Image 1 (cartoon, rainbow, N blue to C red):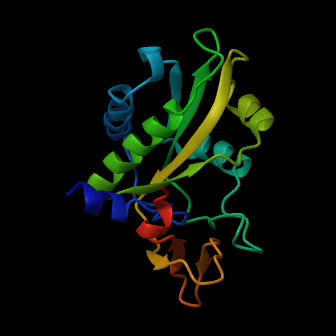
Image 2 (image 1 turned 60 degrees about the horizontal axis):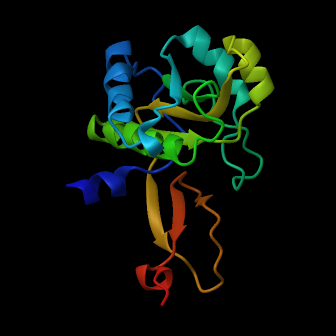
Length: 189
């Protein structure tokens, strides 16, 4: 069951924008992050939840959407996420956030997949502009943004080719292909 969730948990970048995600669903997903591991149990992460179309429209242009897909600035209107979760680090609690935000993001995304949704962790963020448009206090470090929605694309895992190219790509049908290294190539010693 977990294996299937992980296989379905791809970095989706196009969504059925008309399919809304309500605040209670975001709260349920955030609760999964809350219950996840935290280094030293410091729990320094804070979150901004957005399922409001106007707020989403302010977040969208602050994000980078796929550096390997040339001449694409992100999903078109109608294919944009219906919700976002901005993950912040509270510098009043810690100056280092280790991998807490990655653990939290993975928990959120697995919960989204379980509900028939999908998403994408985005680290390519115009942080200064996002801070302004969302009114984020200086004590919070912007770590990640998770885009969420009902996927409007198919993502498939491909074996990494002999040339070792890890770049994802889209075919002429719009299918998103993600090369992955073989299990035996990951094991050393």
